[in-house]
Amino acid sequence: MAPPSPARRGARQRAVRRIPHTGDLALMAFRHIRTCLATLLVALLAISGGAPAAAATATQAAGSYAALPASQRAVFDDLERRTFQWFWDTTPAANGLTPDRWPGAAPSSIAAVGFALTAYGIGAERGYVTRAQAAQRTLATLRFFAHAPQGDGARGVSGYHGFFYHFLDMKTGLRQGGTELSSIDTTLLLGGVLFAQSYYDRDTPQEREIRALADTIYRRVDWTWMQPRPPLVSMGWTPERGFIDADWAGYSEANLLYILALGSPTHAPPAQAWAAWTRTNDKQWGRFHGYEFLNFAPLFGHQYSAAWIDFRGIRDAYMRRHGLDYFENARRAAHAQRAYAIANPGGWAGYGADVWGLTASDGPGGATMRVNGVLHGFKGYNARGAGLDYVDDDGTIAPTAAAGSIAFAPDIAVPAVLAMHRDYGRWIYGRYGFLDAFNLTLRDPLIPPDAGRVVPGFGWVDTDYIGIDQGPILLMLENWRSGFVWTVMKKNPYVRRGLQRAGFTGGWLERGQSPARGRWRRPVRPIIPAQAGGAFQRAKAGSSSRRATRAGVVATGPRPAPG
Image 1: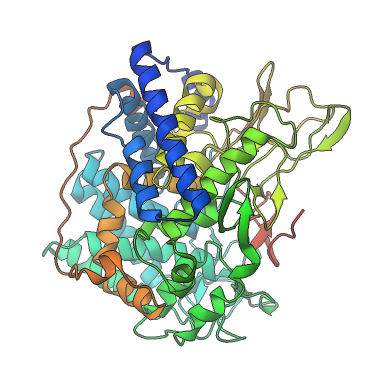
Image 2 (image 1 turned 135 degrees about the vertical axis):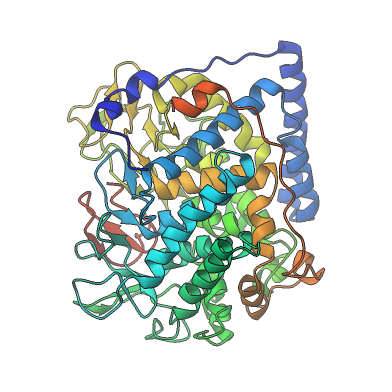
């Protein structure tokens, strides 16, 4: 289905509404006390450095979906449905090329396509679309990527050596501008491709073709070619300049990259690639705002890989030495960001226990304003974050930071999502869920921002939704509620092989869940209010791998410097 018309876009602001919070005050007080006690227990466990499994259990018990009152469950039902609908409505059915952002003009982001492919399975299980509809959309997408032209030319191609360009033209599917052949964005695309391969497991012509095309796309990726400085994998390549002079080294969103590379039956790097990738992790290990963990300042670095892989109870050599797993590590990262927001060293408006979350997102770029007598400039799309590696904070909160952490830390993410929805929903929650970002400090700018809008008495609000920020919200909501995406991915033999070659042991990886078994149990479908179904350019830069202009033409380069 094509994106809504310009006339319907103009009605989006009228569709934004505050959904009032209701509920019994005594019950709310009881639940608040219970959450505080569970949070205290989790914090004590984190400080002592012990028992990540016990900490995770306490966290999940404190914030499970089933334990919420019906009025609060309805908020999450609505958010999941609207976020799914963004992928379904904005992605052309003919080629499956999900836009980087909407309603702003944008090319297709191949990473957003990976989240979309996973979204379709979630939609089928939740009853938003039929399985046949989801399979047809998936099949169109995989047919495009399987047959898209590959080659070393600067024009007329979509990829090379099995990798794809970061941004593709929405209509032709060919390279957009000077964008790079991206190893990490191809990885996120492959997350959705392999999800589709394992989810569509029925013996029908349509689903057999899905599995075959997914296999073709994955096996064709030549990871060893993308290693000009082995055993590490380069961030990318362009026909004009060759390989990017930066490799994936040190903890980030590229956990998934090395796992999928090591799982390849055709072009896998040597197993020591994982050891090389983790060799510099100690530079990022340490205590930040009361939590000791492997730091990565923007929360997307903890979310992207874990959107597809259940890291609970499985550990590589590095995490075995530190006595925790990547799931627990991400939980601590979320708690540390919340603690940072409570401390609020920058003095930004609105920060607190339930308003927190820094990650790569849009921002009020170009705006300036005096804050406590100091002239501040604000950034546009940027990898905001807070950690030992760096702090980059201009008062801009991205709801995906908290919502995408809900599977790790529901005890703090659930209250954050509910508070932002309740208190700010009138301005930041609309047709497709949360708009990408908002800034409560920027109320009276000296120079107006070059994107979004300033709401008198409230602050700056983005006007776009971004695919790679919508993706963690949707996938992690479903993993929190049911574990669905994780369950599907556990069946995939390539994922399991990659984890094993990386040295992961323990948990579900050793319990022998056969890739051929463990069919998914359909979740109970929520009742969606009628209005939820019908009322309903990130110039991607600032991720650790690259920067871009708002026009979507990417200038590749190293990860942002701390500061």
